[in-house]
Length: 154
Image 1 (cartoon, helix red, strand yellow):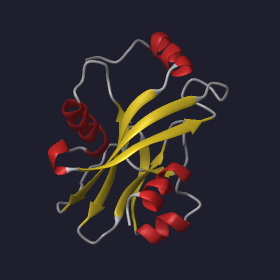
Image 2 (cartoon, helix red, strand yellow):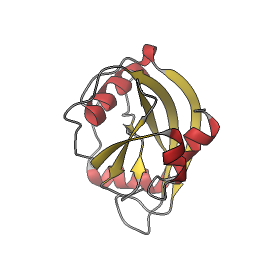
Image 3 (cartoon, one colour):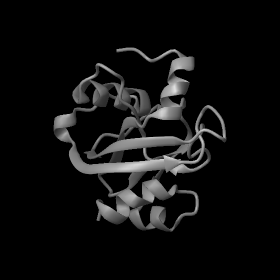
């Protein structure tokens, strides 16, 4: 399991959908963790943590790796509730504003009772805990994040 060289990954993004995992993280107070995205697509919006599954990774391995990269802790897929499959279409990508991105997303919800300290800053430059109502009303929260809360998280 390894990341593709950038020139090959650019072709993949241009011509195929990417498969990813998104985490809907709820704390003991009923608030949800979102991070403000540093990179396209969805740059500048609050979004749930998540990431791409690599070729050769099992879902369990990807879940642990992505949670560790995005949250600083390894989470167990068996403790998560599967919310469904979602599609995200973006007009841009990390490559350029002219290359679109298509994600097939596996969404999982987890309730954490321990606090998350030292959240990684690779993909998000700010983290915030939102109430469900607050994130649904915020113009800073991305449409695709809001969909999780409109359709699966009540």
